[in-house]
Structure formats: structure tokens, C-alpha cells
Length: 328
Ligand code: AQP
Image (cartoon, rainbow, N blue to C red):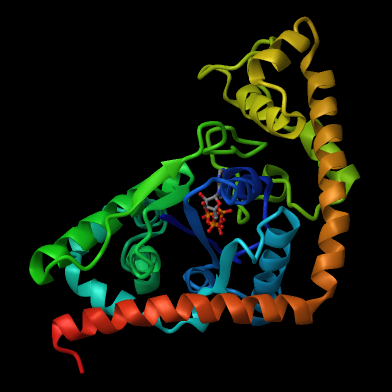
């Protein structure tokens, strides 16, 4: 049995990027034989950027409700909240002693933010969060980590940390493997196709999953395009390729079929159609979401059960590590 572990940060409203790059894949993967799935709300990761407490709590439940909406099934997957399992914080402290400042300093997000705003003012939490991430997956002996391309570096670091611990104290951790979705490892921003679509991006750059249809259509109409007016997929057509990827996901037609369908048709019509189809599909999901989100007691029960399952495994792992280290 292979174990899959992955999380999502409640750091903003969930976007189309989160859905196509992660949540939709998670729901599909549950139906593969021989896999056990663990999905969690990575709220400890969210606080590396200042969050409003009320919003953070609300978004934590929102994510659980969205996961259920897109088909993540609590009877098939363990769904839990990171901060409710103290073993995550505990293992992070321990693993901090198996990674160097040099290694953490090379992580893209820290490097990028340091380059923009200076290294000295960056929070230690931002510097250290890849270690928390390593703990998140090593606690559960994860085999596979489904991630967007930007996260591959962190999974590699988890392997380095795990190997280092194993070399020093004997076989303790499984070495996790990053698994990229073939089609949608990265959904790009609508107003800058060289940037990832992010919850923390500017208003016009992303589609929030709970966005109303008119706004969705408008945002697609305003989406940037590439220089010529031909609809085709390719590295030299980053904006149109991104829209083709999105449309392909929502129509279940291949990109090649869409390119054939849109031969001779202009960008305007293509963006209008894409917006309308995404709006229609998302409004179906939104109706389901509203119903699921309104039953907070049920959400709490699902969380309670998931936390309990995850805690058993996580505590077992922490107690093995502590014993090896001589921590009583
Ligand atoms: N644009 C994207 N394309 C493909 N996958 C994406 N993911 C996020 N954005 C895209 C994937 O969603 C999962 C959960 O992500 P996360 O919310 O924990 O972290 P993130 O990648 O940092 O997401 P954001 O939206 O960019 O958040 P902020 O703006 O707060 O930093 C991951 O598997 C991620 O790859």
C-alpha cells in the first residue's frame, strides 16, 4: 500500500490553481488501487504570513468543505488539521537539527522574498517552513507527495533530511517522492502567464472557487493573451497555453482537440467561451459547497475522526524518533 500525503494552506480564498493542481487530483487519486490518502489543512504554514485570526479559522473549515465538495471522501481519505496534531510542531523542532542554514537559504520562496525585501527582515518561520513540510510528510511515512512544480524542491529537501536522519540513527523514515500532475502541474496567473496563479496574487490574477459567474467571465475576458492571434499550445504562447489547459480541464476535451476546434477563431471568442464554461462548472460546485459548508457540526466530526487517525500514526513516529535521540 502506498501512502499519499498533501496539504493546502488556508492563506486566502482557494483558487482555480489549487483546484486543478491539487484538490481535483486528490479526489481522483482516491480511486486508484493500492493507495492510502492523507490530506490536511496546513494552517501552521499559513502563519508564516500574517493572518487575521477569524479569517484563518473560517478558511480552515472552508477548505474542509471544498475538499468534500470536489469529491475527497472521508471514508477513503484521512482529512485533518495540521495545528491540531502537535507532533507536526514537535518533529519540526527535531528535524531542524538535521538541516543546515545553507540548505534552507537556497529554498526559492525564501530566496525570492529576501531578494525583494532583504534577508534580515524575513521571519524565521518563512526560513524554516520547508522543515515543517518535511515533518508533515515524514511523520506519516509518505511514499508520494502530489505537488505543483514549485514544491518539488521541498520534497527533495525532505528526502535529504530523512536520509541524514536514517544514516545517523538507522532506518526511520521513508524517502518520499514528489509526483507532478502531467497536465496541470502549474496554472498560471491570468494577468501574467509567467507567474503562478496564487491566492495571494492581485485580484485579476486568479479565479477564486467561490467567485460569482459574472466576475469569472469578466476576468477571463480581461486575461492577457500572447502576441499573434492563433490559438495553439506552446512555450512561446504561455497565456493561451494556460487558458487551453484550464478549458481542457473543464471540458474534458484534449488540448489538441480544442486547438482544432478553435482554428480560425479569435482570442475574444475563445476567452468568452472559457469564462462561460468555467463559470458554469464552478457554479455547480458552489451550490454543492454552500450546502456542505452550512453543516459545521458534520465538518467538525470529520475533522475529529481524521485528526484521531493521523494522531495515532504521528505520535508513534515521534516516539520512535525521540527514543532514538535519547529524548525521554
Ligand atoms: N497555480 C497553481 N497551479 C497548480 N497547482 C497549484 N497549487 C497552488 N497553486 C497552484 C497547489 O495547491 C496545493 C496547495 O497549495 P497551498 O495553498 O498550500 O500553497 P501554494 O502553492 O503557495 O498556493 P498559493 O495559492 O500560491 O498560496 P499563497 O499565495 O498563500 O502562497 C499545492 O500542491 C500547490 O502546488
